[in-house]
Length: 258
Image (cartoon, rainbow, N blue to C red; front, side):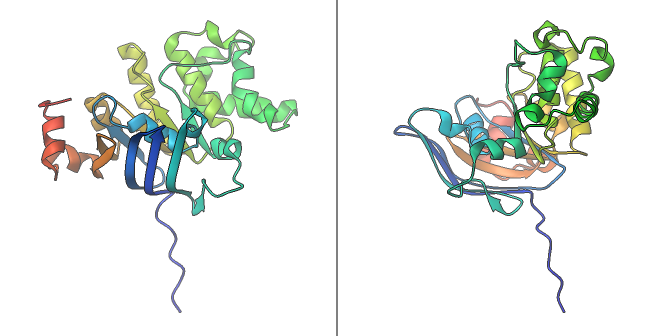
């Protein structure tokens, strides 16, 4: 009797298209993501990387005139099925943006706990435990444990970005999206976030847009090269950077365009 083969992918993207009005920004992308890995999306500005990322947790459709076709399967479940609640999707597929965006009216503690309180969890012992665990996972606990009542916006830029990561982690999403999470940070803060990403993949699957090819090479297991809205090449990072299969990938990574 043959056993049931487990699905090797946490996220399966099939024929994903995205438009802004008439502009066809993302064109028929297929991409399968292995759990507990980091996938980097690279390519020149305006090539569709961030739009593609925002389609993975249904943020793209929040833009007036935007639409999507195709399917995104999270653990075998299509996030675009009719009747799927986009807010529930975003709890499972968290997002960290280019610019840190802590909620200004909330404390450090409140920023991390906000997803749980919105879900109706009020028990202080549960909130305390999740806040500490999330801040530890975001490598921030030791720096802020004595400032939990301070405004989230009082932290440094790099700390604010890690606070946003802790906020995303607090609701235990299986997948975390990161849109150029270090582009606004200094080299020391960037190094901390990169170390954090390598740690985080033990807990979650990370998909990250980056303009920095050295960063993609340092932190990712898989890399997709985007150009003009298409995924030109998707392979293990080491392979893509050393023996690219497409001449356009080679031209990009050797700096001949982009």
